Image 1 (spheres, one colour):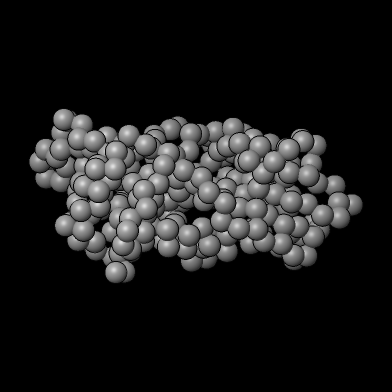
Image 2 (tube, rainbow, N blue to C red):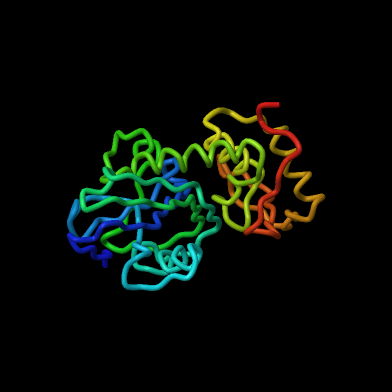
Length: 235
């Protein structure tokens, strides 16, 4: 259910969430969108969001974010969330002066979506080729930029792969997120450092990879934590 704002509202603040996932079928990153119930922009696809100065009291932004995550607009476990920024002006919402604190999130599991939910190509949404209401295209573009910049020096892309993955999968996801081929040796060195630091561990299991060849897998021992590399991929 959408948060309702009366025409006389002078100001509103929202929490908006950019939930990304890796689609193995299309080998692309996707973003979660919701079909709006109410005006403005009824029936349009938009970012999942909630109003935090409405009828429900949220003592902190984290409380509001968790309320959004549990709501029917999201209703899925998230491997990672972080605040990207806050924007606001008198033009982004036709109802009144408004602002939004928006977040980047990563989802790594399989789940059945509700009819009002859908995953769409991140590239199309971030570029504005797929139009969203309000300023949501710009919010997605900034979240995409945060994903790219943080992935240059951290293990963030591994969040897309879940608790168990292979080294070739790690190479593929880093190459996809960084939008260029990444050397296998570079990824393997980083995985080795993470293993030595207690973030990863050889699982002793194998899974079928490209061409049906078995690939050894790693267990992520700290799935909710980032590892910061001593060198970025630009060095």
